[in-house]
Length: 196
Image 1 (cartoon, rainbow, N blue to C red):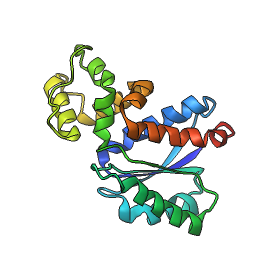
Image 2: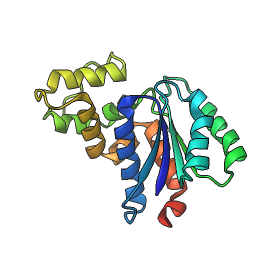
Image 3: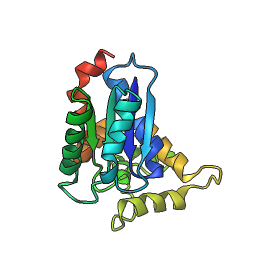
Image 4: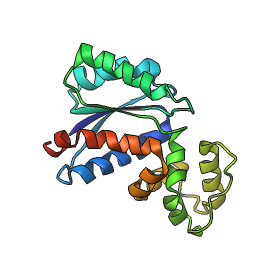
């Protein structure tokens, strides 16, 4: 299975691949090999959607594509990206399967909403709330890591990956509307995924 992935930041790449693989694995455990065609935007994906669409479908003949952008608290951002994807879909590959995800306000909020993974990684008390709720999700998540990571061989990127590997999707669905929508988008095309 070949999946195109357009995403914003460098720290997003590996965790998003893991999250997508895990979701697809829950829908169809028989899918073993997923090849990702990556298109990092290094910032906003808005001006990259058309280029990515051509790359994914015209160049690499992907089975599906995933477009992910932080909502940055803007409620209409996902709708705008979906409109762009639809426009390019009609032009390039009308029968393509595309998913748009917008972590609200940013990817790190999913890790904070799920919270169990980061508590397990750093052996934090399960019943205690994660500190620094007044900070932005990215700053908060990274500060928690910085203050608790005593292993100098473990990088920030490693913690993002480990969090994605062990996070509880059921808890996250209950805690995050944006993740529930993202997961639900895969479920809507589950018949296609089950037959791959």
